[in-house]
Amino acid sequence: MAEVSQEVQEFMKSSTVKDFNQELAQYNLGPLWEAIPAIMNKTPKPQAEAYLWSSELIEKQLTVAAQIFTPERGGERRAIYFQNPGLTYRQPWGWASTTQTIYAAVQLLLPGEKAPSHRHSQSALRFISKGEGAYTIVQGERIFMEEGDFLITPKNLWHGHEHTGNGPMICMDALDIPTIYSLGGTFFEPYEGGLQQPNIPDNFTEKRYRGGMVRPVGDDKYTVAPLANYKWNRTVEGIKGLMEFDPDPHHGFAVEYINPSTGKSANPTLGTRMQHLPKDFHTKALRHTHSTVYHVHKGSGYTIINGIRFDWKAGDYFVVPNWAWYEHVASQDSYLFSVNDLPIMDRFDLEQEQKYESNNGFQDITGEFKVAFR
View (cartoon, rainbow, N blue to C red):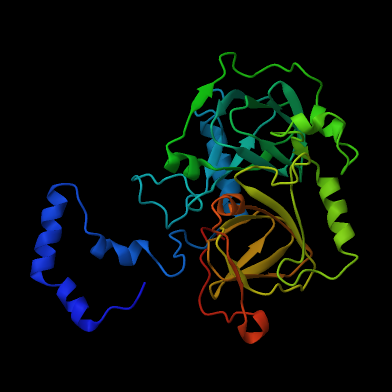
């Protein structure tokens, strides 16, 4: 907005203006002249804060939750979500929001447990952090999950989970809950029979797309979820191909999970990537309109966000708010899984990106990092 003169500023603070503003409020009206500096920023001003949750904290709280809750005894899922400290203004208990558009959580499923099927108007995805032997069943298809796998559950599809293997399974869940909630489009329905039973072959979509970048003839009609599970070994193979060339200065070696029938994001409202940073690789800083939630799948290093250093290791989660400068440094060979809201920004033609031009593209560290627990 244009700068206003000192005379205008003084007038806006006068008793005449203040009294009139209060009078408008009595009739549920509001003065734009008072609100416009806050709602019409020259550049985005994120309400979400940069933050990091450590693996120790997460595993400790999941252990406690396992002693209190089971998926069959209320709550639908044993999941603990990441509440951004800058987004607790909606309710006293928070808004289940990790960024302004993304909900992210970590879920624990123990051997023998079943999580009942349900469906909702939010699109969901999950990344398997640890474990194997469990499956999710989506619209009658059992999809067995292993560490490093990425899975999608499009909106309004029945889905539930069962663990038939050994050892705990931990996964990262992400949904577009804040976006759908803000739009007033939330619907939820439990499955009457508890956990839906299979009615098509196990791992159906994965088998049909075993050929990689070839599409089964006739599959163009499966535009919602032609492929439900993106296997870890294939993701690594894709990254290895990139490693025969120079890394991207801002992303290292990164791939995006896509819908093989449309070529667009695997999830229509949430973007997902796997990023490999070789030991000692330092990305150059940039910022963009979309926000990102990171999960450190392997390795260790740190990320500088608006001049503040956040040290991370395998199992940690951290948030890069929208329009925040950030860069990554890998202390070991590292793999970062990330969820972003780029598809939403693209849908509204809001996405912009800037590269950090000073100091050869690298920020100075100006503050201490924030972490929930070390």
